[in-house]
Image (cartoon, rainbow, N blue to C red; front, side):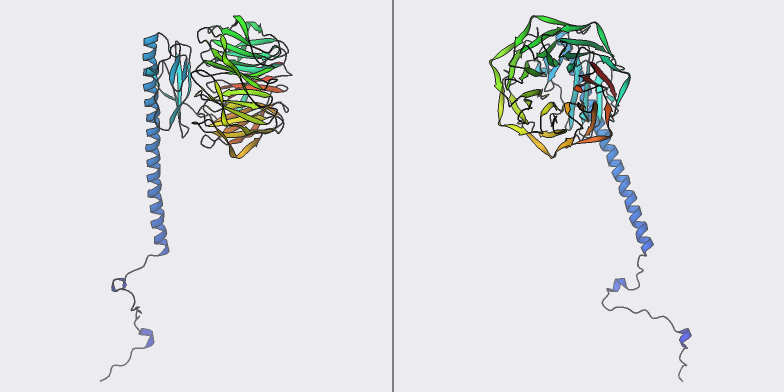
Length: 485
């Protein structure tokens, strides 16, 4: 007997099986899109937890390395103090150079860490170190390593924003201990002397507020040990030499108060180790070279007293490692590059001695890490940006070689932590504010790119601790004072 076929309504489902599929796949359920998304999300969460954990561990390692470096260095400095009765007042390449040079007390740093600042008056010290990721710690003779809150770089004028100077102030300098500020008054033939409140940044004129300064003083600088101040005496073709009272900040002319320079000296700088001074001779197209007696502050011209520069050399800067000297040549739109013999102080032009700048280069500054150099171009309204080969001293323009700098930028300064650059905008009576990429050296204008100064700002200087900025205003006969956030 035959069974009656089932109706179509009761027909069983028959799976169609591809004969080409492996047997193990037959009947295996597939993942739905929702299930796949859940798996992806879970994997992402686990990955992010791993990354965060790794980052946290890495940051802790960086902090530990900074703290260990600073603790070790503090011990070295205290051993030096026990040996010589004073903390080192100057350091070069992380080794003490004064009051007694001794490489047995050099400071060590871990990979990717570098010392930014060291200041001491002999009785105490402050030392700051930074990792390449920007994490910064500081230590003093009486404290443990302390985290340094990053600066935004934005400036704010003090409640009393200016202080009077002599007539037409030009150059300005600040002692490494932050206690004293000095301004050269070109038309007044004096140097104004101020004490500085390390807490607020406010300046106060000394009881005797000025000291005579020959004829038309322009550039001014102070030795890292705080014992000597030098000024380029533009109208008399000399360099003025002063000793400084470390307690009061008062200057006293040396018994022999001047030494001959070339024609029209303008810029002046002293090496970090305190053994060399260099002055640009605007009218002679040379740089004068001097040895400095670190005990008396007296200068002596080298046996070969000058070296050729470009046309109308304006300002001069020395790298923190003491190996390189750079000069802006206002007349031929270049930066001149020299190597420096640390033993003799003699300069030698590099094989390729110059690099192009903008039109009318004036101010020049070097980052503390030695990796970047910046020059203001008065007539092209830009700042030239260079990377520096720390082995040879040769400069290379960045891929984007300049950044806009308002109207007639005159001078430029960089913070010790390397994160901020400021320029005196002479034609617009402002200070330009930039952040610096510490990896590439490139500058970026802040969201609020300028702040007002007095009329025709000329020179600019920063305190070593990075908290204060001061700017001379040529036609306002004043110094503008700012706190740095």
